[in-house]
Amino acid sequence: TAGLPVQERMNEPEVPQRPPLVLIANDQEWSARSLESILAPNGYAVLRAYTGQQALERARSARPDLIILDAQMPDLHGIEVCRQLRADARFSATTPILITTAGPSGRAQRLEAYQAGAWEFLGQPLDGESLLLKLRTFLAAKLEADRFREESLLDPTSGLYNMRGLSRRAREIGA
Image (cartoon, rainbow, N blue to C red; front, side, top):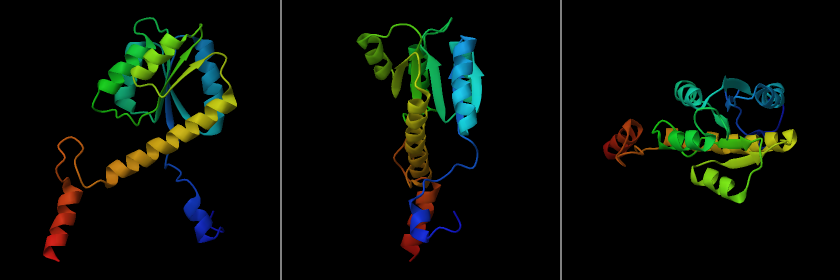
């Protein structure tokens, strides 16, 4: 990219410093390995969970960039895991969560997933190329939202100036 004209470099998407981390929560080994075999060669780091509770714990500790949940896990349904993550203040609506199902998926199940905060609901078999394109789009949106949040002058919870905002306001007043 160093040899490209400045205008072309400015239009390139920003590349994160580390590979994007995807949490795959699925109790079916073959299904999880299938997803991992699509993601890992394409630059994604993969973290695995085998139950809904384990998915919640790993998501909270590792803070993945993307989460892919199986709808039918042994302890907690993937939609319930999604709902709990969306209720957790450590996760914003900007963390893409996808729910997959090996069984038949009806309209009601898709709508329930979307109401729980899922960005996408996918049935098996997965189209690897389509999945990679969706993940790339979702990741770009998440990274952009994260960048805006980091550069914000206001605390999202209180609506008051954060340290960056206070510092900027002090400079403005001092000028």
